[in-house]
Length: 181
Image (cartoon, rainbow, N blue to C red; front, side, top):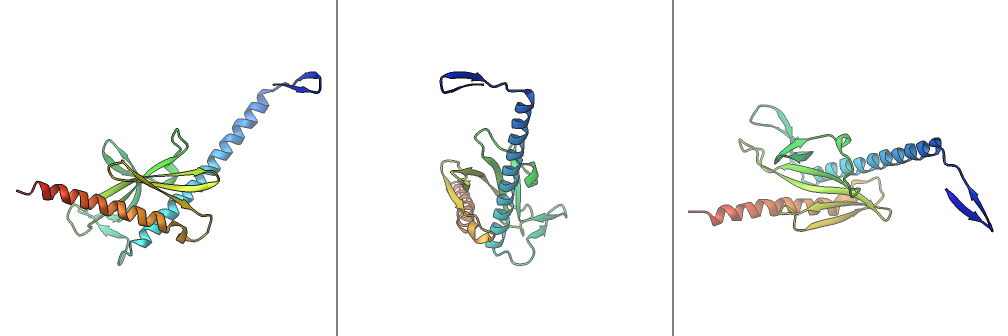
């Protein structure tokens, strides 16, 4: 590294230890950010589940006889939803954490239909944000998450998610209505 001080030029020697320390610090900051974003995702899911006012347990017995949550975190792989833990998430190339929230929309149905909505958590200008993407991925709603220890800071994000889930159901309903013979 070269820099000028006054009129004389000095050369500072960067060692491997300097590079290694910088890489370790970068990894520590990345892990810290992943942890904080993971907490935001966990809190968002908890706030969303509470906002649904599910009567009774937030689980049901599915067609296979297994206990299943009505709201789950996951990813979409090859057009299939796969439930994952927050610890499995990582940053995308644009420094956002993509994930899906799956909502079982009718647990009394034999095949328990569901809707999975794509979301992102990211930080911008010292603010935590959740982006909720419409089902057709043509629009999205970005909600700011204030620094607080209450779930109330997720109210706007929960409202947006519920509206997008409901719109997904209604748009599917319209498709069936248009092909009604």
